[in-house]
Amino acid sequence: MKKLEITHITRYSYTDTAQDSVNEIRLTPLTDNRQSCYHHAITTEPVSAFFTYSDYFHNRVHAFTVNKLHRELTIKMVSTVVTHENNNNPVSVPSLYEDKTLRSGDEFQNEYAEYLLPTSYTGLTPELKAYSDAILDDGVPLYDLLQTIYTTINRDFTYDVSATSVQTTVGEMLKLRRGVCQDYSHFMITICREKSIPARYVSGYHFVGDLQGGSADFTQASHAWVECLIPGSGWFGYDPTNNCEVNWRYIKLGHGRDYNDIVPVKGVYRGSGTQDLEVIVDVKLVE
Image (cartoon, rainbow, N blue to C red; front, side, top):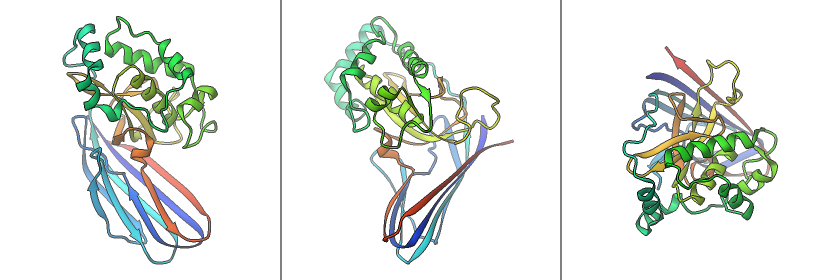
């Protein structure tokens, strides 16, 4: 059990005055079987009143509007979360025949349709189908297959912050063979869905402050990973970017079909000028 403190500051600076800024933020850590959020505060400057609700995927959303003229908008979130080591061993493991029969059945396909269908980010191309087919799944237990998928992706792609943008699709990533955590996660989701494994995109934070060396992303604590459904056992977290299963270092904000469903901060405003965005994220281990 570990206690982690997260500070996430988003600051928009406008070259001209802005007004009627309407925003949605998804920055509330979940409380579930792996983590507990027991302190959480969001403030804005200019000060705003929040309208709070849960979206379709049960993510906590804070919505607010700044009507008056302003040249800067700052959103600050501070949370304290207790996380636990993942016990990533399935509770029950169906036989290979039972598993395949279940996942190919209409009832299962309908129940988890949103996590099995392609999205604008995760569209299946012939090249992606060939990549997926090369990861053999005949006679492989689902838990082992998921490990093979994320280790294969980690081996075949290079982490590169300059190679892709927030709009990059998995088809484009496959051509580039490079990307960041968003791209790695979308890629794993695509391969899983092609194999009828429900998979969802997770937004959150990754604590790496005590690591020396290794393949972790040290410059940005904001992170994305994947959760996959193992029938009879539940959702399990995998990080293809860092080639591991999710553990106490991971703090989950929420999940969706892809990045579009769980954008941490998004909004629109009235104004003729341009904007600069600054994001500061810090995750500390609290002794």
